[in-house]
Length: 288
Image 1 (tube, rainbow, N blue to C red):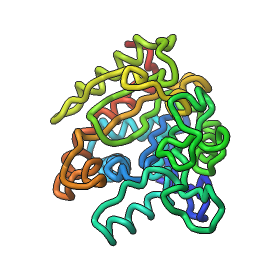
Image 2: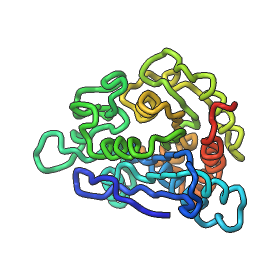
Image 3: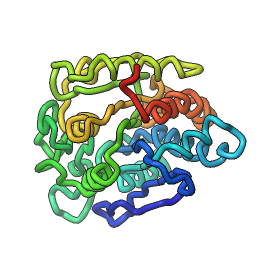
Image 4: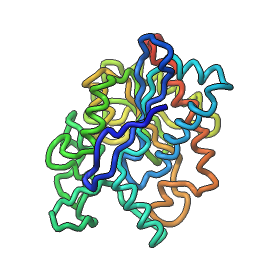
């Protein structure tokens, strides 16, 4: 495992990417990308990303399935795409017990204070379908930003994706118990619709506890500027979004998106088999 800084946020925090593979095995390995906590208040998504890192590293010696994944896949995990937003959420929850912060920490009005009229929805800031299903009002929770890749966080994911060109990817969010796949920006079916749908169904079947609903992203709602559509259109990546959990765990916005602490591991364990399945098939995802 190696940790890289792939960019800096508006407030100067490093965006960390974890690279996991066996460097002693010198063969061509299909790249796999996992990203989490693009939306700040969706903390459980980061917990799942961290759980995946822990599983791959800690169980390498004793689990032949995981050893094969690490030996023969090039795995990249970004457990928190949005560190500034993450810190806003942590501070607000500590102070008030709740937080609804979704966006990054761009100071939209330039007054030197990041408040609720600020920030960009990072999952509306990619170029494919930019502006569709988004807002140009900086106060909106789905403000897309002034232009594609205007944000350092999406630039960091763009540059990492350009470096590794992932074959498959999973983008972790919460909540609603869904496995989504392109397209999101249009109601048209992607050219690989049937393959991605089958992969998503197989991901669901790997979930041991709660099995999520499989949908094309635009069947939920039409939304442009998302990471999945960008990766699929740019690199042909079979890209999936997992909406972790079914939500509404207690009063307040934060507890709508995040389970209580004693249920975190349950949601981690429910999603790791599905995520590892993506790495498993990365050598030939079309074989289905």
